[in-house]
Length: 157
Image 1 (tube, helix red, strand yellow):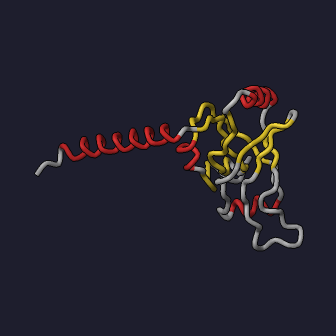
Image 2: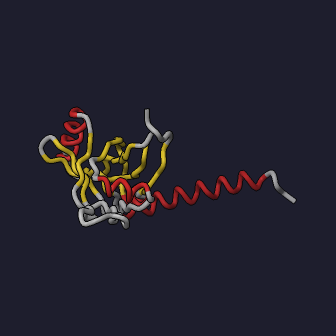
Image 3: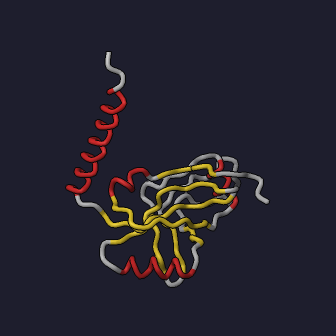
């Protein structure tokens, strides 16, 4: 039985939803060293430049920054090393088939602890064009204005 319950978000990549059309989202485990886990429990990580690749029958997380553990010794981990993702075989095969299509990539969305185990949420995504980004910003702004108008409608002086 796990000592911890629930979900604790360590890092999230909010810019990914702005830069990409998200098609599918997968939850994967991570193969980490002890100092990486301790650094994550301290709440330090960055998913900004991260991405995932599939080589053969394995999925890898690349370029995700987990800083060195301050209390670590000489065998501390390197900050941007490759980390293996734990996915089912059919998920890896499905992702490999989609990535071979042009325009698809695997982007990390969030890194969190779920019942004491480190998990990462990766998304199968297509890059947005500049006009798509402007359109989604405009839609979000229109939504906010509509919600603001509805909430202030009953508060007329």
